[in-house]
Structures are given as structure tokens and as C-alpha cells.
Image (cartoon, helix red, strand yellow):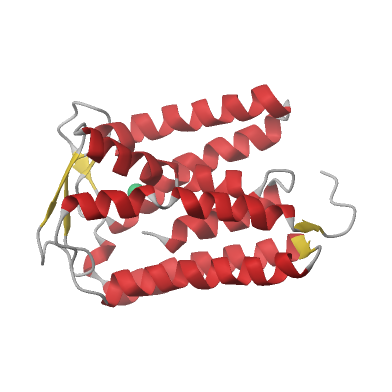
Length: 221
Ligand SMILES: [Zn+2]
């Protein structure tokens, strides 16, 4: 799951308009922002195993700290509390926490049973839609488009950067998704990890986009 997570971030703007799109992306994609860092630190492991699912060749053999249900909840609570500490808005903080946990729920739909419930747990879950590419693409594409529509209904550009910067970001996300789908399998883990780390740039890009867009109507909530 890739653009589906960003779809959640976009759509959440409707529920919590005061949160920057950058922060919403950070939350919705937080587990996948941690994961490459933990890979590089050697705390989590992945293998390249072409054919393990139809859509991704990655065997997520050990990632309890970024991708267990318990840790997803803990990360969600942590991000929610940090937001609350700075912004004193409990509703927005709660929505942000939900965005973090949503990542695990969406991953549950697509991953084969490789997601732990808690670190050290032996039960692994995953509904395996990565083996049903048509359904996966329709599902993930729909979440993304729906999120996009909600975001466009909530914000409008304040200037040209808010138009072109935004649409360039959207196009780039789609491009990454499509090239992951159609491109060759990666050949080394370091490259996967660094590509993952580079997703932080998408978060920064989204902060910049948000600064160049404003809420429609009075936007008070
Ligand atoms: Zn993930």
C-alpha cells in the first residue's frame, strides 16, 4: 500500500482542516517513514523474494517495531500527544492519531500474513490483496481519489504555487506507485531503505504545498 496512505492524509484534511497536509502525510505514512530507518539500523529485516506476492517482491520477515498493531497504536498515541502539546486541539490530535493507526489497517488489507500484532508475538496477519492486483489497484486508487476530492473540497490555492506545487506532488505520488507496480524488482535492501527514507521529502513537499493553499469558506472548525 502506497498512495492509499497518502489518500488518507489528503482526506483527513476535511476532518481536521487546521492540520497541515505535511503533518497529515507524516501521520498516515508514519510506519513506512520509520521502517526504512529501522532497516538501516538493523532493527528490522526484509528480503527480496520475487514471486512472494504478485505485486511486491518484498518479504517483510521482521518489522514488529514499525508494523505491529500494538506499536501502530503507540505511535498513534505519541504523535497525537505531540500534536496536542503544541496545538492544544484534542479533536485534531485524535484524528492525527487515527491516521497513524489507519496505516496498519490498510496494510492489513494488502500484506500477506506478515504483520505482527505486537513485538514478540508469533501470530501474523494480512489479508493478502497484493495477490489480487486488480482489486488492490481499484481499492488503493479509490482511497487516493476519494482523499483527493475531499482535500480539494476543503482547500483552495492561495497562489500559483498552491496549484502547480500541489498537482506536481499528486502526479509524483501516482508516478511512484505506477513505477513500483510496473518496474523491475529492486536488487538490494539498502536501495529500498534509502528510497523509503526519501519519502520524508514528500512530507516536506506537502508542508510547502499547504502553506500555499488556504481553507475554503471561513474554514473554522
Ligand atoms: Zn506500511
